Structure formats: C-alpha cells, structure tokens
Amino acid sequence: MFPASFGYLAPRSLQEALDLLNQHGGEAKLLAGGHSPIPAMKLRLASPRYLIDIGRLPELRGIKIADENLVIGALTVHTDIASSDLVRQYLPGLAEAASVIGDVQVRNRGTIGGSVAHADPAADFPVILTALNASFVLRSPSANRSVAASDFFVDFYTTALAPAEMLTEIIVPLPPSGAGTAYTKLGHPASGYVVVSAGVLLARNSSGRCASIRVALGGLGSVPLRAAATEAALQGQSLTPEVIAAAAGKAADGADPDGDSYATADYKRSMAVVYTKRAIEAAARRATAS
Image 1 (cartoon, rainbow, N blue to C red):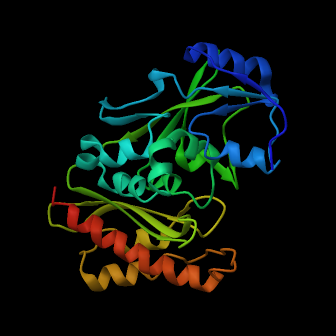
Image 2 (cartoon, rainbow, N blue to C red):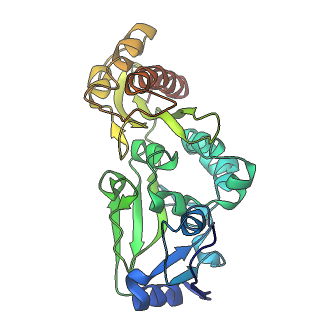
C-alpha cells in the first residue's frame, strides 16, 4: 500500500526541529532512519500530516564519554555502536545488542533513538539499556528532562515522550570497577526480532562474589522485565555454575508472556531461563574482582 499524503519538513538545526514539532503537535512525526514510521505509514497504521526529517542533524550523532557516562546521540546508527571502540571497551553487552539487530541494511540505517522511541517490545536496545540503568534526554523548545529507562517504557509502543519532545541523547553510566555486561538473544528466524532476550550488568566484589547485578528480559511482556528473583538469588553469592543455573531458573518468575504461532508462553519462559543463564555467565567472565 501507499501512505496517505503528507507534508515533508527538513529542519537545518535541532532548535528548528523542536520548533516544528511544537508547532504541529500530534499531527507530526519525526523521521530518522525510517525503519519504523515508513512501514507503519504504508500499512495506514499511522497517517501523520507532516514528517519532520531529522536525519541530517549532525549534533544528534556520535559516541563520547562525559562525566563518567557513555553518551550516545539519538541518530547514531546501530553499526556505529556495534563497532565503537568505546562501547566495546566499557559496555560490550551494548555492542552485542547492536550487532544482532535486523540485518546489515537495518544496522547501517536504523538509529538507536528511533528504536528506543518506537518502543517495540521485540526490540533489542530497550532490554540492554534497562539492564545498564540508562536514561534518556528528552528535549522540548522550552526545557530538557532526563527519564530513566525503567520509567520511559510504558506499554506496547508507548513511552514517556510528550508530543512536543524529542529524544536527543542516551546516557549510560560507565560500569563500576569489577563489572561485566552481556546480551543474549533468541531471535525469530524470519524477522530477527526478539523472541526472548536477556541483558545483564554484573559486578564482583574483592572476593569475586556477586556485589551487584541487574538483569532485564525481553519478549516476556510489553516492556523490558527486570528479573528480580534472579537478581536476589545472586546477590552476595559465589558465581559458580550451580549458583548461576539456580538463579537463572527464576528468571521468568511472575512473567505472563503472550504466546504466538512461533513460540508459546511456556516456551518463552523456558528460553528466558536458558538465555539469562548464558548472559550471566558471559557477564561473570568479563567481570573482575574489584
């Protein structure tokens, strides 16, 4: 199908883009990589009156370290995150997530900000960014605010973004000394979307035990799910294969995923245990005693 007719706006600065978004309100949609809005428009699932193309704004691209955080511009494409020396050094789990999104064409065109703002429950970035305790900088013409990942994702394709706000940066705290990160994924063989995935941030103490851990799961609900029972089971424990396996066995506790033609709810819960275990093992290998 063809999309309904729309106006095309190409701002030359971030401020101009914000002003246009504020001017047109709910009648406008932002266009970055285009992998989410264009298919929706072709299917008439979305029919914005205006598209505001922000894809050529250089101030929204790039990866840097500032104030003990890794700062990623919202227009940074997946392949740049996957190949970044900074990301690989400090947050290899984030590089892993970026490297398994879609295919080569998607990774070279799709943006982290577009993925996060779209809030597809089968996407990779929301899961790993929740595990990494990331926050998102939201800008409007009059103010900026920062929203934690745990508060940003509200429901299926729904976020805390207000109509006149734009996601401009992703802020990820650098892991503490002795920490390791990892991301594992069971992808759908046709689409590559998440069936089940797990993101982990794990830190060891001076004795090599688990000092802290964050585990986020994808595919088990409308937003990333924190595996609280798994986290509690590992806190302060020696990271032996037996302890990790027992803790991972609790990953899907309380989850009520929807089944589909490819994966039943029980299958997703079972796979959550498998992929959580793999992610914890990988993060534990990367973590060193602080």
